[in-house]
Length: 445
Ligand SMILES: [Zn+2]
Image (spheres, rainbow, N blue to C red):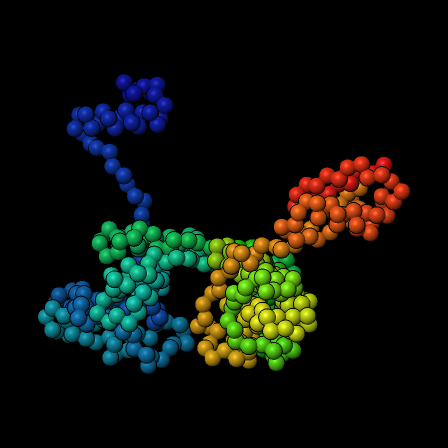
């Protein structure tokens, strides 16, 4: 109101009209104002990177010469009981010469806030031994941006924001060629105890060292990864950790029992499937199915809990088939292969026990240096399929038949089934309907 031609306009519309008017008259132009505040990066602390600046009475504040970088903190300082930085009292660090006039000068004794360094350390890690520059452009091209960032939600507004800001500034200055420091983010959940976040003040903290002393690091890690998907909160449970311990012991006992017939045949070995018995095929299928599931769950989804469950299933299958398979040469090879596979798949989660068992089986190279196994698509196919048999629309039995079997053969086997015979006794078979791969319905009156 009271604004001549702008009277009666909605405010957003008015902003544009006023800006256009000012630009037309040459009185002003549109611009973007960033509401960034200055960031005081200095801290009166000993820890942190020194600020490479000296003070000279004649020249004022002078940057340290490039060839004298980095300024390194003295390591033999006495820390002060009041928590103040010992650097202002450390004479050898404090006194230096002015890079400009060579006269006496004093070093800056404040250090940088740790966020200054954590905002770009991933670039430094790409070539941490480089001594004449913060990073090597070729190494950056190979390593960065970081493929995967894993952190708690508290980083979402601090570290992630600062490092993005640093990378964008470095990009604009021409030092890096990428826009974003991290390609992928996983925000992990918290560990809860008795329904609450673990904290010292609540007194519900479980000491990992104590757990590791009692059960070993493999068990503790296995339990943590098995308890919940990584992005979910996880409830600490004493019975859960004992369950993880029992599983590792079960795997250990399995290998000890079979050790006389195991040999270092490698993982996911290929055998001519025509020469295999049905339980041999079953173990081979389970082995390849486990590789498929674990690879998918770990690589694509970070679902360690379901990956571990799959390895546990493979162990169960090994237990149920071992007595039959250890009798034959092929069976022994397949048991060796499936156990080796279980160890490779479990090794990122429980490296110590897997490496030990791997060596016991007779491998000469370390498990940690072996490749991730590849599954064989063909081995995943189930040879036998389960067919449901109905009599007059009611489920009466189930039979297992070979996948490639003829329809007439399925009919004959369905009619020969003992349960089916009981329900068709004294009746006339009117019709037998086969739904391939699924069911047989027998109509009897
Ligand atoms: Zn000077």
